[in-house]
Length: 408
Ligand code: PMP
Image 1: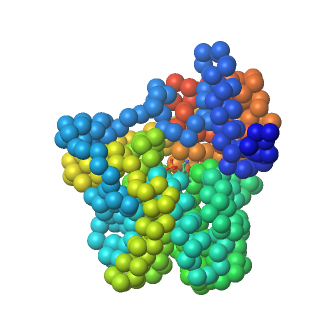
Image 2 (image 1 turned 180 degrees about the vertical axis):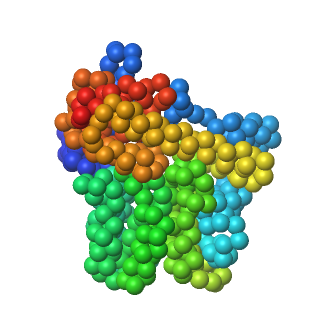
Image 3 (image 1 turned 90 degrees about the vertical axis):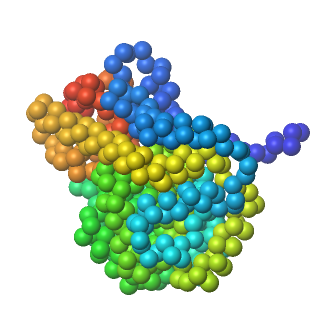
């Protein structure tokens, strides 16, 4: 018999990370197979320009040219990556001059996913409290998989309210208060995936108080800094607010979305520590974790991000491009809502414009999503999530008509 005869087919458990990934691949397959010229794909989790094409940021193209022209060598980076990159990434997240930077432990990571994985492994090994991490319902499907695989217990807290298509703020705070003291809470820093529903700044203040009162530990996942509001400082509000209030947070950062560097796999994981001496100890343990995982991270994406973040001119240009992406998404949200209302839809579509970031939860049922695909060649996952980045000035009218026909 083959060595692998006993390997079972992975179960496509509903809601699992793999099932969700396959669902998104399925959407792309169905989209490709459709011969209707005006078909629309709202399944992909990547930004598209107003022509529906992948967008390479001009600041990234310039940085890439500089990196190539510098004829740099391809020696290994250190275990924690390219120092000019991690220093600048930390400033972007925590804010220049933040006291947290002084004793921050930071390592470059294989994008946001890798950062989450390093964080999960560190918590599994060293977190002194309840090694249960609470994630929102729903969350990015890979959260549960990453934390499970790293050996943490995974539980959920209430987050999305189906009836209001908004935040279940009371439920969320109640669950924070009900969790055993000293638990770990995973928060999406901004542009919650998949719902597009974020707490307001006032709600973050109350969330911070509840977390502090229970002695919980906050783990922030910031995969979309700048992508929500168009302003990298505004999008970092929650992270900075927790830090200002004395929380020793940890943070996963990704440059996939805000620099369009998806496949370059560039991100960072950081931990706030209390003193130089503590920083030294924690840093040594992060290195001990990373070394047997992948030795050291890839350098190209780090050089691109570092070139942009450390050059004042390129940095300004990049901020403008991030804002451009966020603004286009905000514009498409407004257009979609406006078109639905013009058609005479009696439903309340205000959630389309109050939600933020790449994704919108439409509130459409799985059956209505099936009808969108079959009858109108509009493709997205059955949970009703659409990627607003897939909407263009040209297709928004037909999209609104299709939703109106399906839902009224
Ligand atoms: N967290 C969230 C909430 C995400 O949506 C994503 C990307 N879909 C990630 C983390 C990680 O993405 P990446 O590994 O490509 O940076």
